Amino acid sequence: MRKKCVLCMLIVFAGVILFTGCDPFMVPSPEGAINRFMDDFSNAQKSNDPDTIIQFFTFPFVSTNLETGESTTFSSEDMEARLKETHELFKITEYRFDDRQIQIVDSTNARVSGTENIILENIDTEEEMDLTYQTTYILVRIEGDWKIAEEEF
Image (spheres, helix red, strand yellow):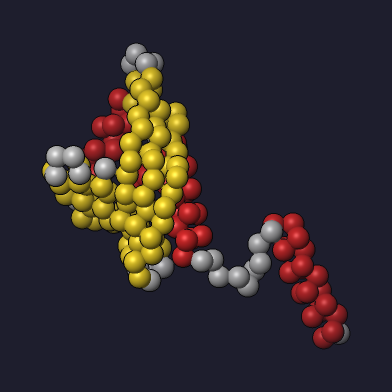
């Protein structure tokens, strides 16, 4: 009986590996976890749901324009208001974070640089705006989850 249980478990694990490509015992690399986080962030942006998007940040959140040197610090309330205001005016029809370069600083800090490609549609006029710019996100790991603490653009 015990051998049958062990054999069944092995068959189930083999099936999981074959059908999903995922090893149930494999711990994802930090880079893999961050790539997955950034993919989830991209999907959240495309959802146009401020309540979903805000979950990817930690607060206070700092946004720095590298060209002007100006930094703005946001509380969660400030960010929520900013997101709601933006999504009342615009709908994100495309969001990609391409050419990712991940730098692991230590077990709880990382930098992700890349090209943000965003297509916004004005809700009133239906005109589209295509935005492309270089961005670096500073991530912190809180209770095992990556969160965006800062952005530099």
